[in-house]
Amino acid sequence: MEPENTVETKKPSRRENKKRVRASMIAAFGDSVETKDICTGTVTYTVIRPKGQSFNIAAIYGSKTAGGQSLWVKEAVWSGIDATLRDSTHAVDVALFNRGWQWAIHTGDENDAIINAAATAALDWGNAELTRKEERAAKKADRAAKRLARESAMDAKRAEFRAKREKKTDE
Image (cartoon, rainbow, N blue to C red; front, side):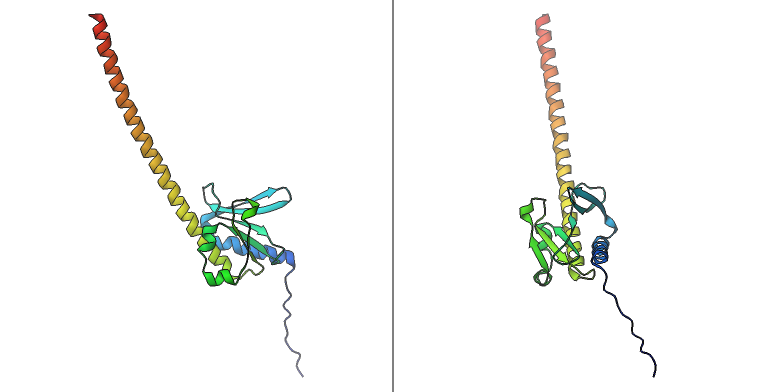
């Protein structure tokens, strides 16, 4: 009788699972983002933002609920995720924490489909926000240029008026 070839798959420890899920979440966002670890008191979390920008599109916190990590996102991102995925996910409304996020998506599995869906929705929201930011900056620059043109025209009129007034006083 031949011995059976059984390979026992050992379940990863909770800490290892958290590391895997976190790495999976960061990888889902791709190379167009940068991450930054922030420590506020006893809580350390990771913010995800477009490269070279100052606004965040998501954050990764630990999760006691799912045994993995939680991805915190804005309301617009949450509503951009497919409804069937939203219904099958453990998500919590975290707007009361006033950290700028409205939903925490908890997952304990690094292969959970919600990770890629949330990352895609967050990147879409971030790109739209970046476009709006650039449009606002262009409008602001246009208004500043028009203001400078008006100011220089008024300065020219004032100079002309002063010259006429000085000419009258000289006579």
